[in-house]
Image 1 (cartoon, helix red, strand yellow):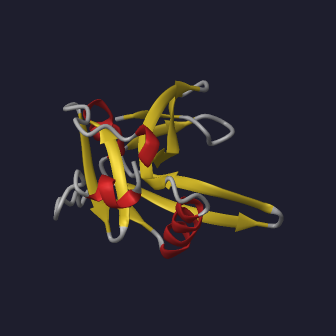
Image 2: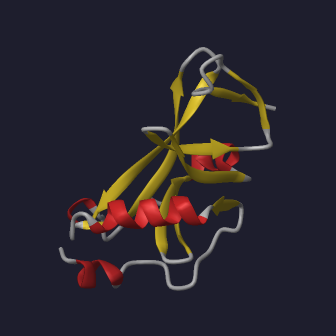
Length: 130
């Protein structure tokens, strides 16, 4: 399935206003999406991890993996021109999240900021919610 075929099944004007993405993060996400013509967007989720409980994950979504009848427990929306998928079960954890792309010396990473977080682990990679 190519991008034109996939676009038939994408949300038209569906938006979810409970996340924000900085310009640096948007540039990097679009760069990663455009590395492969099969990429159509990203999937944001959380995963049990670390000493505090959870961590954020971001994965590229490929048109070859795209389901015409997508999972009813998943929402999709555009943040500006980035197609984003989120599982319904992860929505409470992603409410209010801000995604940034940070360059520090030779390190470049995506950082997730959320004012609803209760605590971070010592390394700052995992979190728990209020």
